[in-house]
Length: 257
Image 1 (cartoon, rainbow, N blue to C red):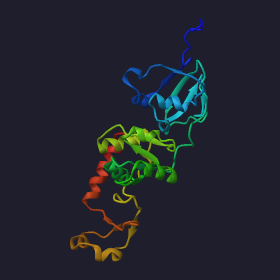
Image 2 (image 1 turned 45 degrees about the horizontal axis):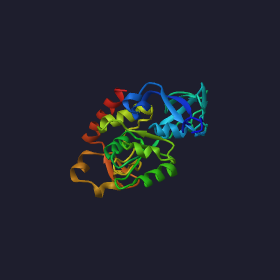
Image 3 (image 1 turned 180 degrees about the vertical axis):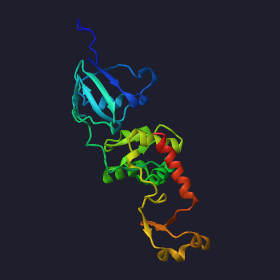
Image 4 (image 1 turned 30 degrees about the vertical axis):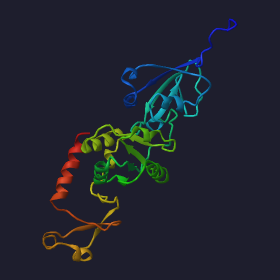
């Protein structure tokens, strides 16, 4: 030892505090309190955030020593770090967001475990890609290529470096999931019921009765005059009792905001 003593492998210390929903990614004993993080070198601040368990895609603002910073900021000894979730509904332009402005043309890619949520998002008119055979790599590729927000129940997926917008859906009930996404991302004003096909996400457009006459059942021909058709899969829609039920369900969700 030659009197040199024991040298710590991690001589530096920074304090982290996570706010609001980000605490749900932390162990119970670390939630809503200051976390001591020991490190060596000068890691980009994105690395310790994810080491502590929080996906970068759920973070929108990092403040170090009262100054907003980007993910490339190099962590220093004694830094005080505050980490905030995505602020889709708040104006935080005076500080440095970690991503472009919120996606005003909102579009989602939903993982394979959220098929019922995908149909509900389409029901309220939100562009939602979904395939029950997509693997994680395909989901990430679609998210990047089509600039879609990833919705998932798998936290690990949100750690993918290529994903810039993502949200971990907390609930396991489809109706509650829809309300959760609308509230969390402040999307109630974007609700446009019965605009997208529930099956394929194609646009539903008005069509004359003559154009779809041969595809209609006798009772449908007798009782309905106005028809719509999906531009992608050509499924035919009309305003039957099921439409009234869907409108009632949507109204209940929107009224509970």
